[in-house]
Amino acid sequence: MGFWHEKTLGEMSEWEWESLCDGCGRCCLHKLEDEDTGEILFTRVACHLLDIGTCRCGNYAKRGKLVPDCLSLRDGFTQFHWLPATCAYRLLAQGDDLPAWHPLVSGRADSVHTAGMSVRGFALPEAGVDCLEDHIIEWPE
Ligand code: SF4
Ligand code: SF4
Image 1 (cartoon, protein in one colour):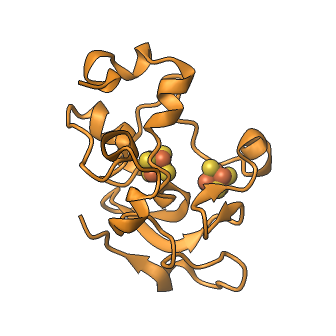
Image 2 (tube, helix red, strand yellow):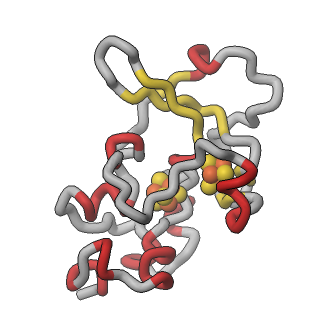
């Protein structure tokens, strides 16, 4: 049993909350919303602050100022459909468990990469991309 089985997202400590992030970097790819259906479409184009090699934010502490539309997942966040289906926060919010490749389950920080679940080697830098619609993707589940 892990702490995520015993606590709700709102009950977690700062450390517990932060450790839930698997480091996949998927939420840091640009998304589009279909105006007619409301469907969220993911692209392979990364936020300019994302370090594609490590899949970590290049300035996590100041991300809110540097990228105003960066989603803050705490403080009453309910828009979990904007997150990829594999995101730990979305999984727990909808009552699912963490997958075997999640670092908290595997005990290895790199298991998210070795399982092919991160954007490493997959994401495109934002610079030089003219049209997000040309880079829409579907995630392997
Ligand atoms: S999608 Fe979720 S688990 Fe992956 S990096 Fe973003 S917040 Fe963390
Ligand atoms: S600012 Fe950082 S956390 Fe926010 S989307 Fe960009 S890389 Fe991700």
